[in-house]
Length: 396
Image 1 (cartoon, rainbow, N blue to C red):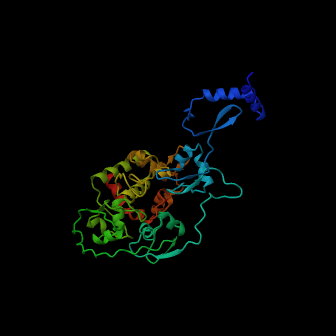
Image 2 (tube, helix red, strand yellow):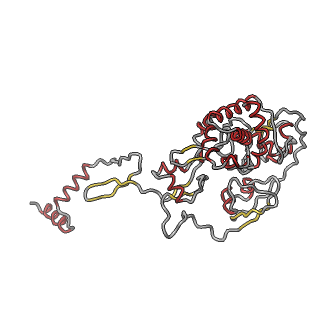
Image 3 (cartoon, helix red, strand yellow):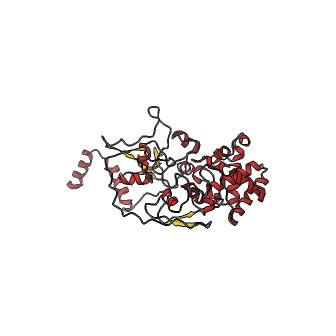
């Protein structure tokens, strides 16, 4: 044995690595390709070493999920392999399981030490502004004025996206941004009121428009515009949107008294379909009249492919609250039957139709409709009670 070989072996013995093991390891390293990569199969995998083996382990379930636009409780639960009922319980959601973009949802039960989803600590000593609401204000415009977000304004004031604000109301603005001065503007030239006819006009929304301003411009009422476009007090309008302006006859009804309208061909077709399906299901005349009035309030008896947030169809039913898919809700037959009978969802929850409401036959007309729709303006349904019975007598 040469001296060089003997010195090498002595050095191996001094560092405590058996020569046979060193030889085995060197052969393994030499055999492994330099570009070897782990193979993943859809789920994220990590590795850890056990002796000479490398074993895949599934990534742990994240503690929270931040809601994105289009998310629903059912879809989030399915994505993480959870039950939607558990997701609702762990996050203290109501029976309608409403969620909003940016909301943080817990994906595990609350620990004994904490019953709330952890949130980021608030900035140290933020400045707080108070905004006094004036006519024409919206939460969107207020948030933009103070360089903050809509959700931040809603959270600071205990509001939701369906809340109504009014002139003189004080709105807390939490943050460090100072209000942005409103740009000087040239007064818009006075517009001539809409022609005194029964023909409906169309208004294209421009920046700065409000429903109040549009109603004033066309000498009509806010409620008439709401009804003609399937909107509500919480609806957001945007530049380029087409707003139907009801004719003089349609706008003549006051906000408090009974309303009436002569149905056009598409409205008549939809009313006939509501009556026919109601008869098939054995619904009484009162129940059919409630359905007609509800559809008139929600969509002007039209099968709309748009609405407030994700509302669609004859009754402005929402996919996000369990009424069905967007395609199903736009199917008039499905939407009408679901209004009467409700819908059993894949996660076991159920939206309640009129026939599911205990004692609906003895309720006030508007209360029975509200039990299904849960509107911010329930009294509107009762304003169409007389007209609904007239349509039923004429068509049914």
